[in-house]
Image (cartoon, rainbow, N blue to C red):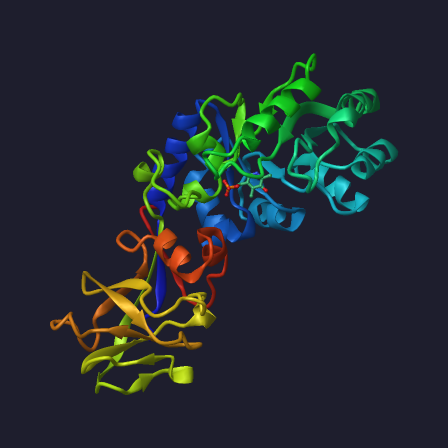
Length: 357
Ligand SMILES: *Cc1c(COP(=O)(O)O)cnc(C)c1O
């Protein structure tokens, strides 16, 4: 059997969820969109269901998968509905619905719902992606009340630059949000992971942590809460071939790496078809038999090469950690010019093995 696999530590996941909730001092929706950032949404939801205040996914397709797996906790759809005919299913399954645009408000007014919906009314406080304009927010809220179709309304917005701890933009967004919603008494939700970790004074009844649940930091600099996260996924495989690479000889497609001394290299059963980033250059850290080493040459579809010259005990069958508890996903991401989110979502083909259930 091919030795490539992703180990998912559900105990670490629960630790990170509790850390998010404790740090925020608020209720927390665990964000498990995109198959829980590559970790498997159903297994992640099952592992958190006993303690989580609820879950958030991108769309109804993702939410239905969870209900069909028996998850009864609240599930928020972060983009609400894409077409009005999803409303009936949303009501049937008790999904909570983000309303980010006036066309959605029109659709809610025009559709007969069997019972009222839980609505999270989203304001565009400065990210300028989705959300209702601050000047229209009070009127939209009033329309929702008048429609009689909202059971409960939570007011939300989303930060564009909370991962930049020295940016003034987050405080500006909070000020715009607070001013545009003044006079409305409702619960509010503003913070994603960087918001929870780096912006403790932002008001919150609900927070929406995603990446931090998986033990990855959204920051590109050290941060105190980040130090307390536990990596959830370990991507590992084994050395399947060992060879000597004489000085001057290239390795891999394109011959991009050429040995500068006589070297010993290992070939690892892991490639970009598994989601290991092809962009990762020579020098990207990985761990062989518990010792840090480096990637050599281009990543292929199913294989990559590792430097064994200074790991004399390593050889055929040696265990290789591509990322996990020792090699942080953020190290791999910065080496590859990517972000941890992007790498984790890309996981493919490798079987996922769960521990700590
Ligand atoms: C994805 C998402 C989150 C989670 O963001 P992280 O940075 O992963 O914590 C929170 N809120 C919204 C609206 C999202 O789309």
